[in-house]
Image (cartoon, rainbow, N blue to C red; front, top):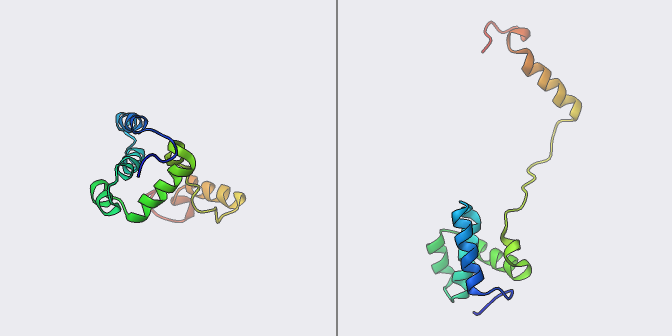
Length: 109
């Protein structure tokens, strides 16, 4: 399969060691997947060795081909958009700060 994106095996191995030392398991899995892919391992073997899904392998290989090691870095996960307006969030904070007794409950819990 050869090199993808022009990075050598040595550069990948260094990045794998660094991610392991830093405790970045997600990046380690992605880099290790690329290295195994370059070495000619089948997707099925990579799935078993790294414990990832087949779709993840192809997604990471594609990201690596297009963006190199930087393409494998963790990206921001924005999450679901807010359903409450800012004014509603402020009112909710006031209610929570007031506690249950202020709203007729017999206990502060």
